[in-house]
Image (cartoon, rainbow over all chains, first blue to last red; front, side, top):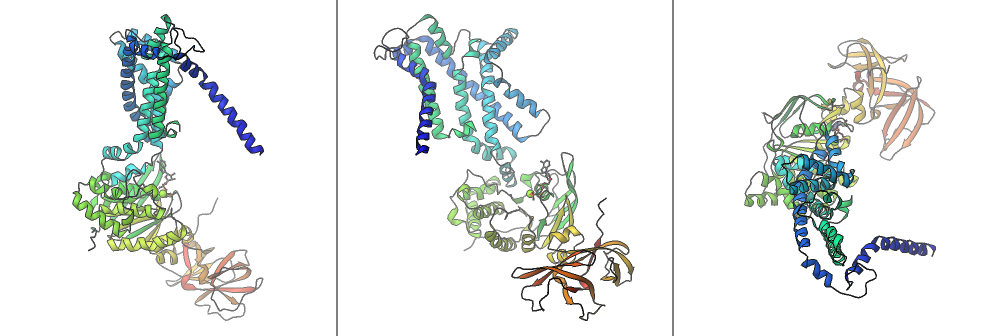
Length: 262
Length: 374
Ligand SMILES: Nc1ncnc2c1ncn2[C@@H]1O[C@H](COP(=O)(O)OP(=O)(O)OP(=O)(O)O)[C@@H](O)[C@H]1O
Ligand SMILES: [Mg+2]
């Protein structure tokens, strides 16, 4: 008896914490349906006008395009380099291996503001580099540590004798890697890619410092809210949240989230 | 119609093979000659370098010195995928994303064998290892014994000249292990492959192999048939690894061509036959297997020309069914183990009584004395 009541207290507590965490998002959700042109809570009615307005705002469409571009390029690049770095870290014992590991992980510990400023200074010094290139590099740096960590975890779970076995059966080292290791870590790579896209897509702080004529979607939202006070941004945020939840749900269905967090 | 696999029998020669890892000698100057079609067991304690030796032969581990020759062909600089050496890993290393059938034909695909021929070999391998019902199963679903059979099927499908098996039975439970032991030998003999099988179980080594190589600390200490190792171990390490042994430390008093006299500190000298290997003088270790010793009543007549005798007191008796362990202690406090068949109709012994422990001079083994711990 005491056990079941203890459990329900725990349940209530868990629920309260979850609610507390979700509350700001729930408020945004509510505000996005407000028929009036203010970011006010509670809403005075229900309307989908602001959702339509999201699609009518040209800076959002441009921002979405820029964000998708950045997310796809930076996740593709960091996936390639991430796999190579992870392979080096897991498979080989060489001088400087720890240094590479530390270097790849460093962006995790540098505040994003610092990264943004550093990249800005660097871009100014290297005048030949375009704004878009700088952004791509920045996003790669932000995403790479996560990709490397995920791929390392996936590679470490593989029996190194699998590739040896394949080679004794006649496979060249590259064939062994492509036919044995790649299919086994394939799902993990897909997870890392989705994770990278989401991380890049949602980045705001560091990106802020570098945006030029083509802001990303989060930056466009920020710029919008500086001049307008209507719930369009709330509607946009709700849609971005839904997209994020959908991504997590699909990942859970296809891959299993535990592959990502272990 | 039973399609069959055929193998070319090839011998293996290792000469002066050494492997160094991180400045440590893992294999130390190993010489080994394996005849075509022979099954050799590598027997030794954990960490003595058994897996490393297989990996060197397979080309997965670069030797720091020495030669590996398989079927008359120098292998030292040949890449693993060109060696045509099959290996069954300790962990089996089955490809988890492939079915049993896909695992088995993987090597054939890599060798560019045509699909029609692949199917024939697959059927032969599935039949031979009784895996036909499991052809579409994934490894994760299989029992340990089934996984082991898939690993063997996969490694022999490409008809390698040599098969290396790294503790293939260690993951199985006792009962299955005993069954698989003889099955494995039958299978290897049927296909006639040259094979090296690693184990740290002496019974397994003796049951499967034609000859056993006992390893310790990166070296082969002795190689021979089970009988050789059991009856003529060349050092205490080998003697202890294959069964129990009683020891006396002593020195050689006098020697003729036939017979040596040994002083073990008793009033009576022990006798032993001299052979080419026994040292002529100096300190030696005298070894006697426990089942060679017969306890005799004090007054019983013994032919002192043919038997050695050490008087000792019976300390304890353990009846274990098939055998009985009798523990004795002699006048100098040395412990002696005597093993008697449980069926023995010899008169019962009494704990606390003194007996003469007698054994034939012929089974008195001499070894170089152990270096004294400083
Ligand atoms: N990559 C490595 N780097 C350094 N030392 C190693 C490496 N691999 C193995 N060793 C060492 O080499 C020695 C022999 O290892 P090996 O795996 O050949 O032993 P083994 O006889 O197969 O033992 P087991 O019966 O436990 O499988 C061990 O002392 C081990 O610590
Ligand atoms: Mg081993």
